[in-house]
Image (cartoon, rainbow, N blue to C red):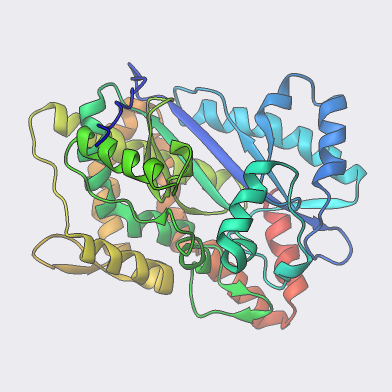
Length: 376
């Protein structure tokens, strides 16, 4: 038997930040998805200048992804995203499309969507077939730097306790193919259908993760580590934990809140682990239930808090969590951004705003209008 090859972890001396923001392209008139990425990227190549490296293609031609460089604060990351966003919005205006930030589109049909060029995308669809073609979903990924490989998996497993908080706060995909799904985040339920997606395994040691990756490659499940599409995963080549829990986000203000919350949670767990604390974890079946409850009920979810199966409304738990994280946020320079989390809870998350627009108008195009307008 071949022994597993080691996976090097490019440690990050500081808890740096990186953010990836997926946005859909929608037609300015019909409000349907637009397969306009080729036209957009012709303009990006010609006119985006230094921003070109931060504007990426994705699986489908209806999507553009904005990525930051390595940032030290939430404010820096938001400024970085903002620069790319303004460039892309200007170019989108020229080709008759708007940017749309949510986890799903309310009425687009999967069969009308076109794949981006590239063997990697073609292989994904060939393997996953119907489920792969259904992936009309958009999300936000947040990377946080970790200074020691052996911290990664304990922090990852403990961070799963806050999975429902992150998902409930960001839920923005209540509608699918012209219908209300009854879920706050239909995206979360869709994405886990891919064979390597969904909740991560809760390994205790890095060698267990290496053995897992070795088995995945040996059996042809993956060719590269980045094909492990867990909701939270190690990114060894970047020296980060990558949080992929959140639905697409419609505006920079809420993005700042979500990034701040993610940064504070991981840094808090890192500091507690460094101080000698054994980080709390929950059994996989409890984590799985929490994911479903957050996807189904959003900010109305009653979540499981601990291994004793204590339960509490997620918004009530948020109230205490935000107070506890204030010193961490102050040290990271994101106290104001973390405070926006409480505003989202009071004002309503994206899924709630979308439902309210549809209830008032009975028009799914108006829902798209409302999401587009929030980008500001």
